[in-house]
Length: 373
Image 1 (cartoon, helix red, strand yellow):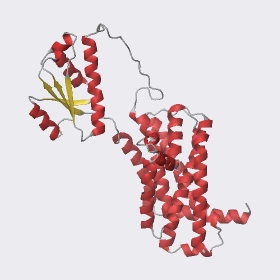
Image 2: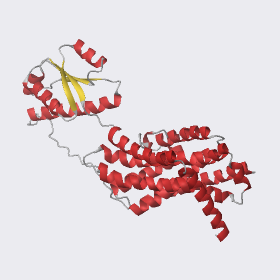
Image 3: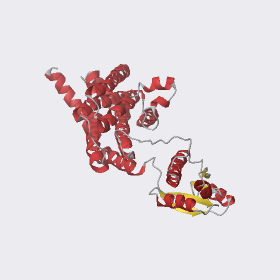
């Protein structure tokens, strides 16, 4: 690179950085929202079900139904126990969302357990909250099963005695934050990078400075590099902030190579910048760019595997998801934090990011050149 080319490139980078940071409100929005979102989602956005209320219709009033109720009441996940007197009370409690589940004991529940028969307890769930109901059902079934096992420690004749030992690798205690925080780094990084990049060319058109770029001695690749610099630098800054806060504030272990993480992060940000440049190039105003950014961001998040596994999607949708930068970097982020992912595996999930970046940046350059002619 010659001295003149370096001078032009430096000038466009400084100009783009100044365009981003000259507004005090803009400077605040570049740092405060990502930090606030990380803290908000980390503490508030959780799929764990806690402090739920459970109704009890006890037609048995025996020792073992009382034992089940006391175990449920003593669970740290249960808020309060709501006594119910009749099936009509059960319907009313569920309909009015007073409780999410009801334990309905058969009149011979305790007697059946003591006589080594099957004690029946019905769990009525509020199906309007399907995911939470499934989790609550699992909690309650586990408690009932523990009480039944303690009531009859000896094996029933003719049935085998088994014991299951469950071990969870990478997240032994199944702490929800260990799963969600590495994913939030990916999602919030994508949102911030796309929002900055998508406004760049559209802002030039709206401010009337796009014509000045057309007559400047800058080449197309120099303009694109200059516009890539601010989102790349801000993306690295926010990612570094997340890398510090996630282990220290939320207690998520960082077990892998930080160097490999930043290597993959570079290509992740560049691939997102390529997508953002495509949106910005085809947009005439900043409002169009914002709507285009929103239109792109939602599918990127949904197809990343953060909320639902990619393997659960239809085959044709999995093929589309392979072109999603978030999908590949989510594997890297979770692997670096929780699995001490080897460098070879990180590289296997990084080269698709480089391929996506090369395609999107090439198309952006072609469209940008066409707009300048």
